[in-house]
Length: 554
Image 1 (cartoon, rainbow, N blue to C red):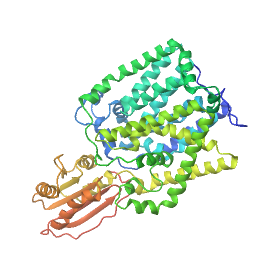
Image 2 (image 1 turned 90 degrees about the vertical axis):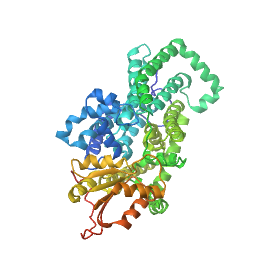
Image 3 (image 1 turned 45 degrees about the horizontal axis):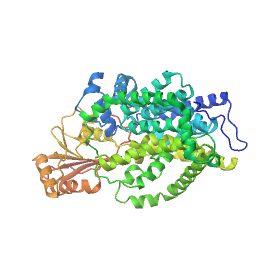
Image 4 (image 1 turned 90 degrees about the horizontal axis):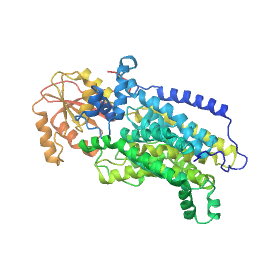
């Protein structure tokens, strides 16, 4: 069953680029994409989840698959990939080596997005979508992170490309086998892969049932549901039998990953107390369009005065947000008018991961997070490309592309250079601690899991780093103070490490230390705060240390 877009109606007087032009453009985009994703790759410190990657990739490959110490909440395929990159750390540096698989996956995603989108919307807009992906601040961010998200996107694109070839060449079982392997790989990379696999089931049904003609043409032909039923019957039993067996194969391939999750269930989350809000859907679309480094930062959005911060940045947020809404809407209209089947594809591809992340937030300890719905990013980008191309004049399209380039440049500049948008600077905090702490000092790390992150960069160093609270049970104010006093004991020197907590959570600890000790040093950097205290019997002049740049190495 053919899936190409070459025979579909086109907007008036709009053609497709020649093959040589496409090839040259994709090569140029891949070179640019490599430069953007390699630039300052090791500049930022690992944050908590990247340190989880490092810990989960240790030992032999068999240990990576079977270990039961570090519960990373996902199957182990990505950690095997990270494990393979570990030998490069002596040549490239620790952060660069661990992030290299994401860089490679990010660059390879550029031509693969073109291949997948071309079959649905034609070469011209597919090339525009690839260009958007190349300069996307959102995609660059995750292409420089030692986490599975960009590798997951690559696997999803490989699966769809194989499914398209299988539809085009139904007698070649090798394409269905390749699809089954790539689709199962998405689940082995992250549990949200289950939502993507669910989407691909509907993709195969729609490929047979939905006509290629425009929406108006479909309505003129009679009942849309009758046309769907006719399409399903016309596909024939061979079509449905072969694809049923293919998805049974996908399910069988996923059984070991399901067993792994069932026997070592994901039970922890750093932000389990954060409630779900429909506003998070809007923030996801905003992030897909401009990334995390344009306007308010992630830290700003969790601050107590976030409303004031958003108002302060309204001159950036409002125009960009309005433009994104308009282009998403225009792209949706264009697809409904010219590519109804592609609208189904993109819509369901977007909705399934979003619903998965939403259900996860409602029924598990994991809050809704944009990265859990990362697979929805690619169809959103396709719709955005359609919206830009659907603008009525050359001038309007040129203005839109100038806006895209300017916003991407500003967002990427902020990401590369502005500490406000950087990941939590555990490396800088550990360097400061190593330079100023004494043997036998106690470090109280709030929240508890950040003790591991500080130890990662502070090792080997003879300080006692205690995760607080020590118990997983919730504590009231009196219990918190009692537990803190017990952990500190009669130590003459104390460090308080604050990271990934709200002011309300950190306040009682800081108030206790301020009332019982004297502050001597303060270090503040992106996402971290390190405060040194001593008892009044020790006399050392207080000092506030300016944060070193996020690139400080240890």
